[in-house]
Image (cartoon, rainbow, N blue to C red):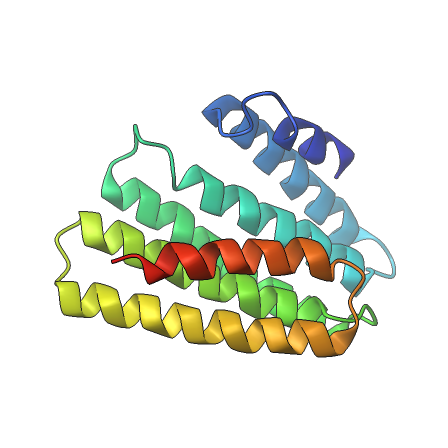
Length: 167
């Protein structure tokens, strides 16, 4: 996990090499945690949370074709399903809300990619509106949970809510 975070904290965190290295390290952390005798659901949820974040970031690479961006987002969505299961088992407050928030952000990013891939304006607007609704609901859940990481996630959610407000 630490090596994955190291690569995300590099000067150019969106550099594809840094993102690939971060992804590989978070995947290794997930694999190690999964193979342990008593897997810690909270730690697994956090590892998957980081993988999802990296995959979302990878979808911003301007050199990728739309279908490659979609592949990163679909991978993020798949990891999100696993993260949700671990978050439900986690004693850490707010883990489920964080996964729901990420899921909404994936939906918002999919709307952005769809907009550049020829989707209709109506479809893009609907995707964005759906994502905004889930972001708002997840924020409320997160605030009620008393999560220690609430400030970071609230800032992230607000950034995306604002981003999705633009047409």
